[in-house]
Length: 248
Figure (cartoon, rainbow, N blue to C red):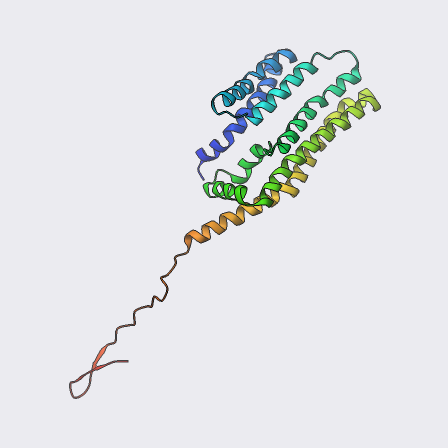
């Protein structure tokens, strides 16, 4: 595995997620832009990525489209003002948008979270990349685990949305301000634990087994059937009468 290979496997994830999310916080906190302006400008990259993939590759870039959708939801929610409880409840809108997007991708047979998980399991290794392709094509258990990974994250994020909305209207506002962050942190930990135990862990084991099996097959050298080793040469031993005898 080379550094360039690893970077290539992580590049799409960085462009589709890290750039727009990091751009939002940089514009808002670093340059002092309003929430509306920061969301608008940080939507440029996912919008271009989504349009480029649709026009040139005839497909929808799932992650870029999701981030664009989330930013649009954030733009709409940023217009909400007034009731403090409504302001707290709107924070869960982003989680619900992501959760719904992930669940829709599972229903369409293209689990979105695979793009986030695959680089960490494959690690830029060509053998694991080939093993992934074989398992995705021929293993029902592998494909099922792939869907379960996205399903877990979709359900967990939607559950976080429900809990925060309920908390926004039942818990004192001052308490919910810090409790919302705790709920989000617990949600992320729960998502990592469940998705790892139910999907990523089993998929990693299947990948390792498939990679090792392929490596073992390629290293074996098959001998021709019926091939025999040549018999060791016998030494000629001279007898006392000068005649050559074959030594045993």
